[in-house]
Image (cartoon, rainbow, N blue to C red; front, side, top):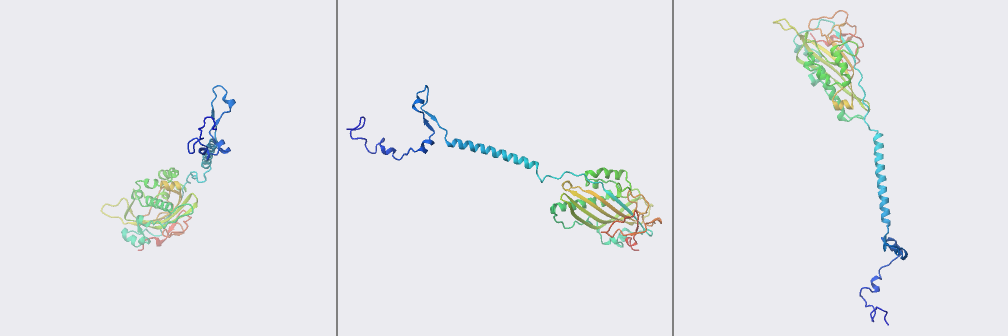
Length: 359
């Protein structure tokens, strides 16, 4: 006899509600624990306003909270690491160091005989400067190579600044004529500008403020620079002295054709040659290279023909054609055309006859 409520023939096969519909569903323990809804017990449902079921936090919620906490910790760790590296950065730029004062030496070279005079072009052709190049073309930049801490481009920049200073201080016509010193001043480290300005305004032969050590400058009231243009020959050498400084040594000889600034009407005074041997030691840090400027460490100048005993702090005082030096000329012969040698230690030297134009 069929149960109450069931069809007499039983539940038809294949219809919904049959046992076969739930045969593939297995309500194991893992399935029950994973359920998001949990039915309250009969006692719990007897309470007033009680719900039939309650939400059940699953493992996914706990895992999400843990991941969020881990992400916050990683962000804090990264931020702390960035702050630490910023404070302890080993590649921070070196502190700015003040430039040292320039040390100067100016040695006049007295002639042994009257100064030769004549046509300036013929004088140059008969002098040791005959094969020298004209003007800035005689200041050659050597083949550059990188050093341990400076790139090839930085070395080229240092050599270029050194050449620019030599041109501005030794070949610029307005500088030679005493009309300005601005081209050379613009290329100096700011820490040396006060020393430079004092050397221009109140020169002194004290090893610090000799004007001739900074620029080649003639008194326009007495001396005129004439054509042909000055002849130049010399070398530039570079070396890394510290990881943050690059040094350049410039060793050049300049030959100028000069005449008296005031001449007798209707007559052309004979020209004469004046030779200046300059040895400059320049230093560059990375800021100098960036700002296109130089720090001058030492400057040694040997120049003649000049008379010994004259004040060399205020500038160069050439002896012109036909002039003779007083008898108290220095005993040691000095050839300003002989480069790459130690400078004369004496305060005055004797100009070697070979340095003068041949008769």
